[in-house]
Image (tube, rainbow, N blue to C red; front, side, top):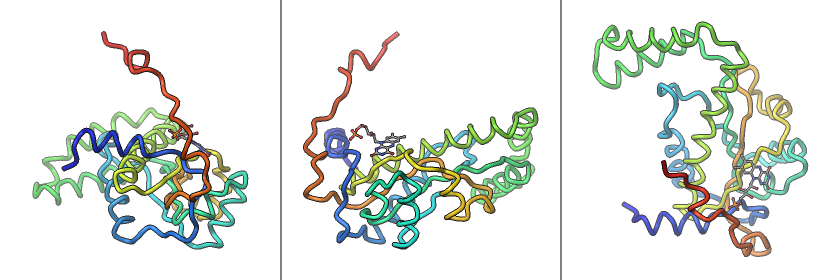
Length: 213
Ligand SMILES: Cc1cc2nc3c(=O)[nH]c(=O)nc-3n(C[C@H](O)[C@H](O)[C@H](O)COP(=O)(O)O)c2cc1C
């Protein structure tokens, strides 16, 4: 169990890393812990509206860099994690979720079917654009968890939206999987020469950030 101070120390230590040390790799057990952390994130109805794509292959990272305004994090980081939102939310997907819930909790599926029907009912009048926007918002909950978990493990990261999603979808074959790249986080270890690490964090005073009603 980490203390409140340890959590805040980790979040103060974190910064959006511009230059990673390419010689340092995130170990498999740490990577797995980060992926588990994202998988444990909250999502609307628990539908887990996105997937995590792990990119380690140097050539693929190079191609992604070209589709990311040549940002160095793409090739210098250890791994690039791409949070990719689903491009639909079908009744069959909801049914699979209900089956998993029944199996996980040892319940007959008809005991959870009411919840499934309720979810499907809320989706019937929604446009594809609405569904994709909804799914993308959920991916950001995963991003928040990922950044905090990485900081806790003293793994550097950079949340990034500065990339061309259509190019990512093509390079990573996401379209055929019913996914679209939403936000990414290269992870690894900061390079000594990354000057950004010395910059003081610019944040509002808490009494401006927080509105107590
Ligand atoms: C959704 C999102 C997208 C971002 N996109 C980029 C990006 O494309 N490139 C980059 O270098 N930083 C990017 N950033 C990092 C922000 O600039 C950075 O988080 C912000 O300046 C605050 O600094 P800090 O994270 O170091 O505290 C992004 C951050 C977020 C949350």
